[in-house]
Image (cartoon, rainbow, N blue to C red; front, side):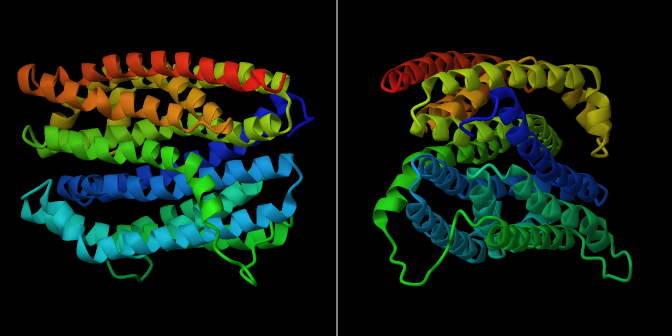
Length: 443
């Protein structure tokens, strides 16, 4: 990471991450496409549960990003014994987080569902799906942490293998378990949840085995290990803002569902579909940003400020190009995208113009995402957190509520324009200041 040509390094590390995140997002989309064949109520139920799934991933990714950054810095400084302690602490934190969500799944799933719908069929579907996903969520946390072990040393291809293994398993099992193919009983929406959980555990086992056999630089051992609050604190110094950043998506979707539900359940279903499509588009940007964290962290830790600047000049144009391509797809093919989810005429009438309005802001969103991740590589996770908070919650949700109440549902989508504009302006100014301040000390 300190000597390879920057363009080749960025592409080599980010492409596997982009591909693996795309596959991960794809199985969320396939899950919704298959569930939509049951009924629109079944689709709405899984989309109401989606914010909790986002929250679980947020906690897992937040811890993983903190571990990733610490490990990459440790390698840059040649402190290999410390790396083992960091990795072991990371696994303990992952296991502890999964226990919290297991307990919430047992005792709080029904309460969560009751906050967003009184429809009895949607309520039953949502509770069934959500309970299974939360109670058996440990696979998500272990898989995410072991993937970050591999990414920290530049092994993004091996990280990709584990994620693809879990995603492909889920995609294959979805129709089999939902509709009862190949001799399996038809489990309906429970089948969708079981397929998701099995896929996560396949990914976790695969990632752990790959790490143990192919990643000797990081030695995880519990023998004579003592939990160190200092390491956990350093992990969450960067990881907590990242977790909050990711969790804002969960809060935003829940709040937006509350805004849309008085109009119709179809509006909620459309927004859930849009959010999954948007996540699929933004996964390459997230992959690019996540690749930037260890690269920037390693070279910053190694005192190579000139190389850090070159990395930024490389990743920003790549992200911009992907965003422009995504905007073109959403503008030209909105009807076809929605029809993948068996969209009704009501959903098409609402969704086609909405997708075109929202897609105008994809370039701004990309700049906010990539700059935030790069700043995290310097040890400042707040820029990423605040930028995301501005674009997904602080400005977006109150403005959306105002427009929905006083202008109607057709105007609510313009709230994205204002929130994304404010967020990208903040991210550009803040990251410029952070890079200038940090790099001045090493160049």
